[in-house]
Image 1: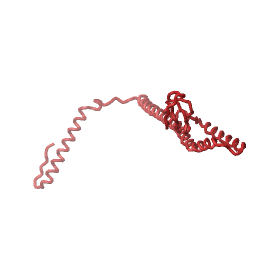
Image 2: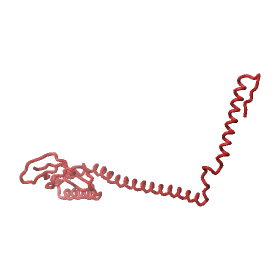
Image 3: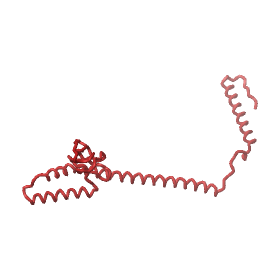
Image 4: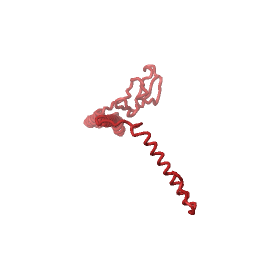
Length: 192
């Protein structure tokens, strides 16, 4: 296409005509390239319906497997969290009752006014110990046992030839544990 020149019109019309002419030339060039390439060159062959269905099946199956794996991980994670929460909550609750247990043990060291009172007090203390033991709580810190820093807190140290090395010689405050989790360290005196 050639340029169309108009005489007597302003510069504005000339510029618009030139732009329009260039656009037409570009459109023709693109159409020529399309015709030369042809529809079959570079295009993927059409897939059969079975291949398309197989691809869709594979995609959905992959999504399903990923979703199942994600759910399984979620289930395991929540079970682990639940298993970790119970001992922590039990330990926190038992820790609140230990001062009561200490008071019972201190009171048991004194003489009682009557035999009935002593018997009733011992029964009450034993009942309290049984309830705490039902939660899996064990006492730690007995005189004569070897000192273990995982369960004992050494408040004092003495030299005594009658006792072995690193042995608990006196218990100031009993310690308690649930399984391997220490609720309260036993405050002890060690020998040698």
